[in-house]
Amino acid sequence: MRFSAVLLVVLGATTASGVVVKSGSTCIVTPISATPRAVHRSIGTVPPAEPADDDTPQILDAFKQCGKNGKIIFQEGTYNIRQVMNTTDLNKCDIEIHGKFVWSADNISYWLSRSFSVTYAGRSTAWLLGGRDVSMRGFGKALFFGNGQVWIDQNRSQSNQNGRPISLTIWRGTNILIDGITWRQAQFWHTFVAHSQNVTMTNLDMNTTSNSQWKAVNTDGVDTWNSRDIVISNWTVQCFDDCISVKGNSTNVHVSNIVCHESGGMCVGSIGSNANQPDYVENVVFENVSLYHSSNAAWIKTYPGRGYVKNVTFRNIHSENVNQPIYVTSCIYSYQNCDSSRLAISDIHWENITGTSRYNVGAAIHCSGAAPCTDLHFSGIDIKPANGGTAKILCSNIKNQATSGLACTGSCPGSHPQQLQGNV
Image (cartoon, rainbow, N blue to C red; front, top):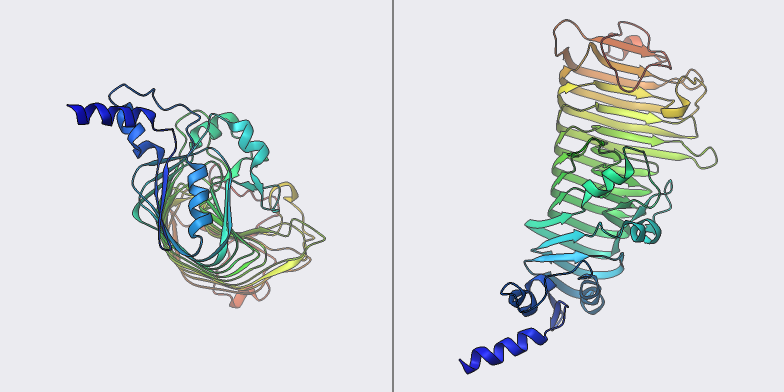
């Protein structure tokens, strides 16, 4: 009885903070939710957790203590993150996450003003992760929860809200591994890879879905930019925007074994939005991908800027009820209907593209009249409209189209929409 009384005093005196225990080069982190204070809170002697409970300080402390030549283990439990995190100076660091990271959404004004800029198109992020020789493993247990519904509702289906944070950005990283993590309800894009090389992202599960009147927009699975030597494999994604998007100055990207639901598919672009800054995409493979109820499957989108897209392969892509499985446009979004882009698209391969289109268009390819597409190659194209009949193949400005392997059935005007609302 005396022991219990002493224990109650100790538990009641515990402050609202998690614990970082360092042993050698290993830091073991316990969240506030799993501390004695939190345990005792459950029997009513400590007030319930308040929104101000914040695990960010001990998370950052663990990276400070063990982020170089060390190991960080986040134990089971819920880690509440109420502040931005910059962990870009890591070196030879192994990270294990066995718990749940939850980003706050009752302080949206903080995130809108304090999220880190990633210098791409006004985007920002809640977490910058970088350095050299870094692994982050979730073992299928780790969950990143972004409270995305709050962001979706306050954004009201508007595109690209400044300050709305990407969940996790790999920033200036070399030899980075991300494996075995589940995302739910991301704030914005789930992940972004920028200014990095030798990045491997495997066994990831992502789902951001709106349950209100407002649509989930800008909830991409991953976007790459100014990066090279990237491997993306074994993902399942439901995101209502681009599933995998390879953006400007990305080279040597290999994407494989992906399942996407309600997404924008496998995409190169958009690129070429800045007339003063050329964009280049080269040596990209998308293969062994299944897409369901998505807008596009294997496609390229550019603005009429400068640069090129070359040596890209879409292989073994299966789609079901996809709006336009194969799609190329040189004049995306506000530049629709232009024909003056000089951004070159060449040496592109579509191999074994099968499945059903939502309407009667299986492929729509509009290359620029000023810079026609060259060396486009098609084989094993078998796309059928979901409601029966034969799919239309619409093409414009393809050099040597007759030997490309694609039997075009009509022209594709610059005004052809990215999303069809019915048969054409």
